[in-house]
Image 1 (cartoon, rainbow over the protein chains, first blue to last red):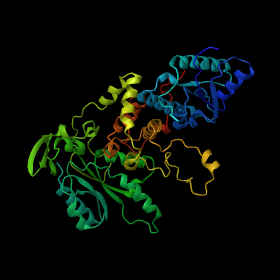
Image 2 (tube, one colour):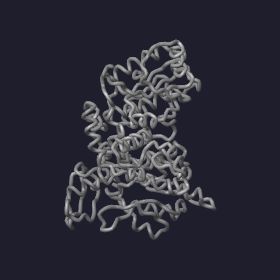
Image 3 (cartoon, rainbow over the protein chains, first blue to last red):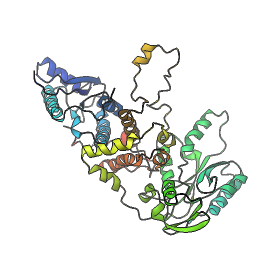
Image 4 (cartoon, each protein chain N blue to C red):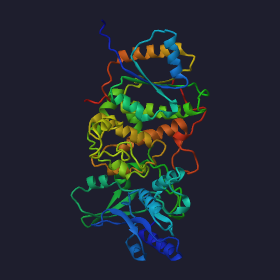
Length: 140
Length: 343
């Protein structure tokens, strides 16, 4: 047993690329930390800012949003809308004083299982250094 | 400078011409100190109208109820919805038109330019003249106000009393109107994002300390939401009305409801409420400062709204409210939007 902190990550993955990418990582038996709670959404453009804030409120240490690469969106332009909206949410979270490292967005295609594992690995290490997220967590 | 008499004359003329029947405007409040919103139905009411530095309210909020009333009315309306707008209010109207909430042809707007001046902040007036009875505040046409306190006239530098939003106003004249009173003159304004930049320069823990201190006071009265001309959703995320909880609602169903934000004044809930309010106003807030004025516990809400305004301007070159003829901030994108934060 190590006494490293095991962070909880909520990953909002788009159905068409990133979910498939995480699936590829799984079926290819790639090793990556088990700290992620993957949630499939139809498109990164369908991610409401509330999903992100709500995750933090319910105790997530980090939130990852992942969608198709620009130009590859199943709905043609959903990830472009996401890019704009999420950048506003990110700047809001930073403005309020949450550590910017706790929130991350990336593009993962269905073929990038390797990239997905690297992102999770890196995210977990960053969050371990930061420790538990207590700022937005609801004290219940 | 536009005077109350100018406004009254203009309204009388328009009523005679049959262009308007009713009007949302301002009249002197009880005691005469501060103006209050007034709804004028006939020529008799016109005598009460006033235009002075205490006309702080953004009357475009009344359009929301008025429009809903008209939608339910059995007979089609015969006259336009008419209101008096300042520079900031007119930008709110532009956003409402842009979002297709109201139609331009259903409105009659009497624009009044603040010219070289602006609105006196009620809080600043109360602090400066603590314990004294204010019976009138007047424009002088220069960088001063005349305040009648305890019956004596005093000349006060405008910068002492001007509301913060007026000091940072990007254009203190109406940008959409049917009739304009006063000139389109620009006053020198202070740096628009001075206070926002001050917070941005803090480290995360200092920012957090600032905001927790500011938002701890929130009593979740939702005055900021009630007064905002942009908060016109039929159903707000903080109080689900389409799924009301009644005596027959079974416990399992109540337990399974998604409650994004609880009503409890817990700090994390309050933070999420204010953040989501701010994000919903991104690219829509025109900085009329009404939320901050209405806040009973003096939360610096404008600092949150202005942060989004600053981002929209600096990252996406998006200016809110100067035209109703552009796609909204979050329903549009450009190929060159920055994605350096995406890894």
